[in-house]
Length: 472
Image (tube, rainbow, N blue to C red; front, side, top):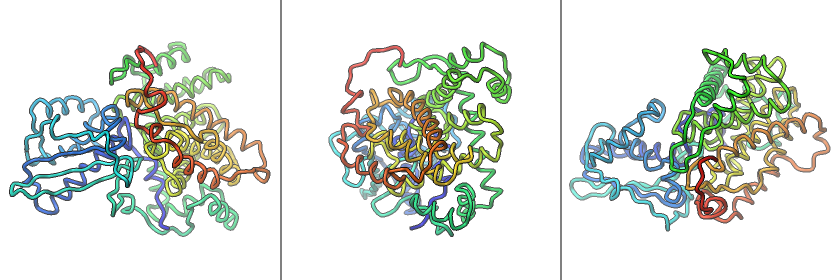
C-alpha cells in the first residue's frame, strides 16, 4: 500500500465543510479540466449540476451550492477572499450567467441548473454529485464525483489522493507497524514520520510546511476572537469566542497576535481558566469556519477547532513548548489521521461525527502525548482512548449548518484529547486492553451499522428538532 503525506491530512482549507464545500469545489475544477482537455470548454452551451445523498440533504447549509458555482467560475479555493464570496454568488444568481473557468460565459439559472436530488443516493459514496455539460452540437459530457471528506475527491475509477501517494521506507498503515518501526530503529514516532515524509520533501521543507500551518492556526484563532455578531445561515447563532477572550484577559490591550499570546501565557493558569481558554480557541476556529472563513483542515473543516485548541493549550500552558515541539505536534497528528483515512473514514456522511471530531480528538491526543515525552506506545494509547470515547457519535447538524452542535463539539473533542493524553502518560500501555488498530476497526464497523439518518443527512437526532433560538 502506498502512503499518504501528513500534509494531505492537515492543510489550509475554506469553511464550512471539507466534504460539502471544498470537495464539490474541487470536483467542479476537475470537470472543467476534463472539458478543457477534450477541447470542449468553449463549446459548452449549458451545464447541469446534480447533488445526491448528503450533499443534497445538507448541501445548502454547508455551502455546496456556492462551492460548485465558484468552482465552475474558475475561482481559486486557496486564494479567494472569503469576504467576497457572497458578492460573487449574488452576481451569478442575479445575472443568470456563469463564466466557466473565467473564460466562457453561458446562461445559468440557479433554480434550474443546480438540482438537489434529496431522494437519491449514489451507491459508491454518500457524497455524490454529477456534472452534465450540453455541447453546442447536442453531445453530452458527464462525470460523477464523490467527496470523500478532508477535501479528497474521487470518481469510480480515480481518486485525487492517488496523485500524491508514494512508497515510503517505513510504511505506517496501522498502529502495529508504527510500533514495530519505532522499536527496531529505537526512535520516536515523530522521528519516524520525518524519515517517511522525506519521500515527498526535505526535512527543512517539512519544518517550513508545519510552521506555515502553525501560523495559519494562530491567525485563524486570532481572527476568530476579534469577531462578534451573528453567524450566517438563519439560526441566529451568536459568536462567543470574542466575549470569552475579553473576559479571560480582563479586557487587556494588545495590538497584534504575539502580544495576545503573551497576555495569555502570562495570565491566570488555574484549571478553570485553562479549560475556558481551550474552549475559546476551539470556538474561535469553528465560528470562523461557519462563516466561510479560512481554517486549517485537520482532518476536516467541521472538526478544524480541535487541533488548534490543543496545540495552543500546549503552547500557552505547558513548560518549554518550543517551535520544534509545535512541528512534531503537527506531524504526529497528521500521521494518526492517515491511519484513520486508510482503515476507516474521515467523512461524517459515511461514519457520523465519530469520523470527524472523534478522529481529530485522536490526532490531538497522540500529538500532545508525543510532545510531552510519551513513548510510542503511550502516543498510540492516547489516540485509542480519545477515539474510544467518541465511538457512535452521530452527525446531526441542525438545519444542515455546521453550527449546532458542531461548534461546541470541537471544544469537547479538545478537552477529551487532553484528558486522553493525561491518562496515557500516567499509564503503562502493557496493561492496555484495546489497541488503536482495534478501536479503528470498531469505529468503521460502527460507521457501517449507523443508520443513514445520523450521517450528515439532517434526518435524525438534533437535526429534526424544531429550533427557534438566538444563541447556540
